[in-house]
Image 1 (tube, each protein chain N blue to C red):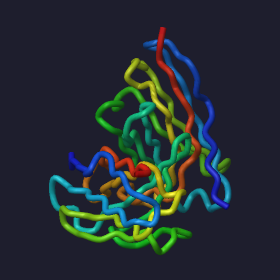
Image 2: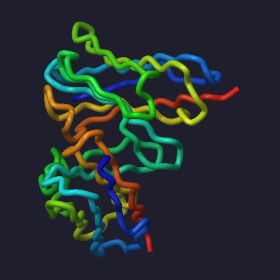
Image 3: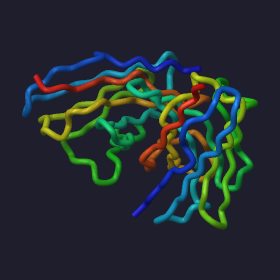
Image 4: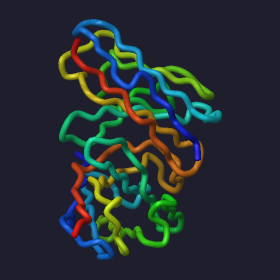
Length: 122
Length: 107
């Protein structure tokens, strides 16, 4: 059974940093691209960042480019999102999601974690 | 960016009735479209990929159609567990973008 479990959320002050992690199990981790998608409570979905199976292909939404860094560790089957210079508008549930494809980031997202809340507030 | 527009925003349907949800892309995306279901407090779940292919374990009452810029998700006979928010997502262009969602509520 595919499982994605996020951790690392919580309350952070504006301008601060937070690192999210996603522990993956139940599939061969290095055979899929991985993504982060966020959702402001009560609002719609926004793709944040994606990374190919071997970390060669990486991309970000314009709203986070230069502030967020995605990475993965294919040894311990984990995905990470380092978030710096956080703003109140970054407050959201952050979901880890598996891309259906291996290298291409352009794919449906076939499994999702339960999400974790990041609140940026003073 | 490719803008995805869903309609209606809210759809009121009685159990057992058919629900038809629409999604329009601002430019042609071929069949590179997915549909997701999200229930309160839960993560989105993939229902349909490549516009019309049901994902693993998705009941046959869910069907998708369309290509280019116009897409439809049909739920043939609504069950109680189908009342939720539905999102479309394109993966033809970059970045990946989602529609604003359609809430299917009990009439």
